[in-house]
Each structure stands twice: as C-alpha cells, then as structure tokens.
Image (tube, rainbow, N blue to C red; front, side, top):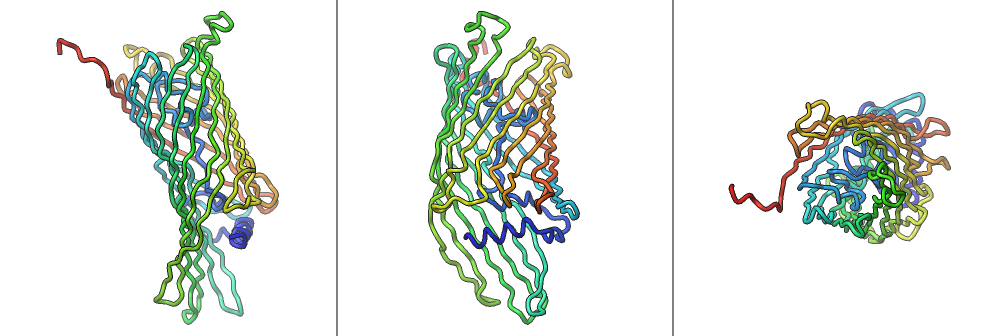
Length: 417
C-alpha cells in the first residue's frame, strides 16, 4: 500500500496528469485518505458558508443535533449538488463535471414545547471520484497508464434533541458509516501483441460513531437584556471510532482470466472532532453566524499506520441571512431569504510537505412554497491547493438545491372536522 500511495503522490505532482482532456469526475485530491470530506449541514448553512454549529431554525441540520429544538413541524429534506471543477498546474488544465446526491433527512417534533425532536437521515460522508492518465514507454514499447477511483462513504444517522433548564438545547446522534472505495489501475500497450494489465481493488468500509451538541440561548437572562434574546452559542463533539475495512482485488492474469482475491482486513482509526459556533438575529430580519470546526487527523491510522499525507484539519466560516418578513400574509419577495458567506478550510492533506487549503465564497436563496415548504438554492465558488511546488489548484463552481417539505404531524385534529 505504501508503494501505491507514493506512486499516486508522484502522479498528482506530475504535469502529465493533464492530457486526459475533459472528464467526468471530482477532485484529484480525493485520491488520498477517505476521499473528499463533506462539511455540509444543509443548503441553508452552505449558503452562509458555515456548518451551523450554533444556528437555530426550522431546518434540518445534519451536523449539530442540538440545533433541531426550534423545528415546528415535521420536515422532509433532500439535497443535491452539481460541481464544475477546473484543475490546473499553472500551464495545463483539465475540466470535470460532477453531480451528487447529498442527503435526505426526516425530522419529527414529538414535543415542540420541550424541543423534543427525532431525526433520521442518510448523508454523504466523503466522495472519491478521480480519473487521470499519462503516457510513457518501456523498451521502445508505448503504453498508457490510467488511475481512477470512485465511491465514498455515507452515514445513516438517527438522533434526538431536547431543551433542558429552559436555556440549553442538547442533542445526540448515532451514525453508522458505510461504503466502498474503488481504485482501478489500467496499463494499455499500443502494441496489440502485448498483454494489458487491469487491476481493481475495492475497499469496503463500515463503522459507527456518536456526536453530540449543546446550544445556550439564555444570554438575555444572563445579561438582563432583551436585545440578546436571539443570541446563541453552540458546541459540538464527535467521538473517535474504529472503522472496519476489507480490501478485495480483481487482477487480470491472461486476456481471458481474471482472479478475485481477498487482500486484507483491518481497522481504520477515525479521530475525534470538535466545533464551536455563534449566531444572533438582529431586528428579527438579519441573522449573523460564524463557527469553527477542528478534527484531530494526526490520530488517524490506516491499518495501524499514519499516512504521511494526512494532518489535522480546521474549518472557519462566517455568513449572514436576511429575511425581510416571516409573516405568511406578506408579499412573496419579502419572505424570500438571501444568504451570503465565506469560509476557509485547512484540509486534512499535506502533499509534498505543503498543506492543502481551501478558500470559498457562498450565496443562496430560500424560496418559500406555501407556509411549510421551500426550495433552497446554493451558489458556491472555491479554490483548493495551489500551482507552486508542483501542486495542483482546483477551481470549483458548485450549484446546489434542496427541497424542504413540511407537514403537521402529531397535532390533535379539530372536533369540527
């Protein structure tokens, strides 16, 4: 595995990855680790550039379960993203497009007064999607070598939230993470008399972890000021875990014979993570929020070893949301929410002793459909990596959309109905 990783690093640092022209797929950086990690809690928070660690609202936050306590009706949410990625080394470039289903979530209020909310969801954890090739020769025989990968991890989660001591919202969530990461190596010779090589490995991964959150919303009572009634401070923590890993391979021995073999079983150590977030609403119209998230990837181990390219990660985001009116009787455009924000990510990758960082800007809209339903739209632009020291820079334009369908459950029907 170490030799394969070293070769992949050399491929990533080489300008020869670019003769592939336009391809479907994600970032070449998803070669490493568990792929490209997902930091999205909702299309709402994406539009604000944050993860929503301290942000309340009538929305499904897939990240911090303590944020659910303000949900007033049963909510079903599904989310999609579409990315256009342009990767460059400063001289050559490759263009890719990539569409992805992100999540669906169901939140059910069991007791709105106490903030007792139950939630069930399926969300994206990481994505692996790359395709790169280069040409060379050996003993005057030309060949093309192709590396590609696909798959990633999802997490099935269920949890609850509750209000305690009137001023604290708590939440807990159980996450079962599962998925496949497939990596393919093809060596194709120009000479038809030579035997081509086609190798494929499939890494089946599964495991579980817990996360919990706490949000304090009693600043008005603490400082005896009604102006602070909508101010919140939230914290988040996820437990470390050991994921199970099983690697199987398929190798071509002859033109007609392919062998399947179990290569190895082992453990993947997933580190703990921590976050803190803040939000406040001004004049019941303008929401300001910011949060900081960190994960201790120095404790990450793959089959007992820590990969040199993996390091601690950090994400910082801040943004605003403006809604002119939340009254159903007001005009449609007054009830549309506008969102703007920005974020910085110190990724969990270090390539060629260079940290990989991401800078991004976000914007979004929430378009109400009736009283309980809405369509949220997202536009995001970010850059990852750089073109110096042999690295690659990704320029990404992301379009996202989510549909929120609300329903009033567990309400006593009218006797006159």
